[in-house]
Length: 392
Image (cartoon, rainbow, N blue to C red):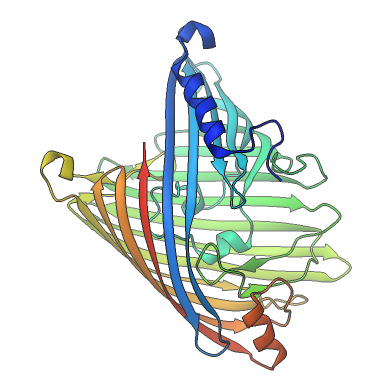
């Protein structure tokens, strides 16, 4: 359900934010710096299964967002709204961040993502693939209302917070979480990086319990793997590593999820990925414990050819642990993304999914559910995704 205090249409919300950003500074607060930002992404996906009859052929406005940043001294504030799949407006990031003197520490309060996973923390504008690794969706990393203590250091960064639920739903419905992340960067220059990190997240569910599912790569396809709602709480632990060396980079993560503590018992799920890439005509960047905006050496606006990002990734998600056999999937993907400028790019993803289907049909795409009921145990899905994106 969209947040009720906002206008119901995305264009209306855009006009409101634009008006706020154009107000004279005294109308907001004297000496505040203001910045309006936004993004738009259009995605197309075509994919099909080898055995089940599954076929997906669809395009969508994947993301349309607009936001306002305010800054004065050690105080920062952000308000960002997004168009959801129903065309309504939802709040994404809404928070205030206050520096604690000269200590290097700060406190953030509001709604934002819990600090888990390098790829999840990297903005969707800058990820090397259109979809994040399978485990990040299955383990439901999300934005929540909460308070977080954090320090973005040159070598050591620490984040720890307590959270309720997402404020677009019922923020204090009973689900809550605690999350922490530590990142060590022994090497960090403009074109060289060594990143090592670890994160934890504990969640307790509301009366419905947690379920875990994942789609066949595409954002708007129904799931290929799923579990029933069985977990009253869960605990995630993940490790992450990345390196940048000039135009090349490597990144990897591994994670484990202990889920259950209810009448149905407990389950152990795992997931992770290995990714490698190269940028012709530029390089990836890094800031605040995550990948940043790719650098384009010669954008087309300056008479150049832009930059071409090439990447390969293998990722896995294993949810076969008892008592809820949700299945397993291995995904192999290739990406080619042309950046005309650092703010405008278009690309293609090719992918192949090899899945061992689980024992439940709840929440699955109809073709996968029917295939399981007929005795099907495995399925392979091949697909292509295309994206056009602009941000400012």
